Length: 168
Image (cartoon, rainbow, N blue to C red; front, side, top):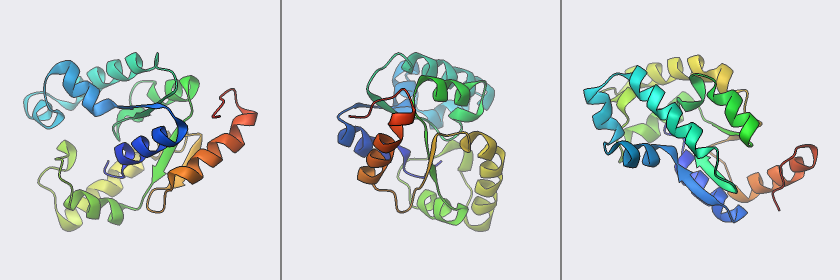
């Protein structure tokens, strides 16, 4: 939620010579509705089911960096499947930094709509706490504030020797 997954994902894909998929964009194209509008018409439960279906469809992609929504790994068996099908990277950021980014974001975020200041920070803290167990299952955790695509590519390549994935 607002840590820069799409921006970083594009850079990482470019450095690896991979394709890039933004799950939110795929969802919006597939269902012909913006996620913000979807939340206005339907509930989160339906969104998570359809989002999960969209995620599962993306697993057939090869040499692809996939940016998920912030909640995607936390529902159904998503994080387990993500880790089975590929290599996961958690972009870690403090609630204060996320709140600052969301306050200045151009794209509306349905779960934080109408929240500002301390109320926004508290909601982010709550969401991070709820999602922590899933995020911590990622193969790699990197500092999202100081993230550098080149360094992450190096990290992936160094560690690919012990995994089945090849990042050459």
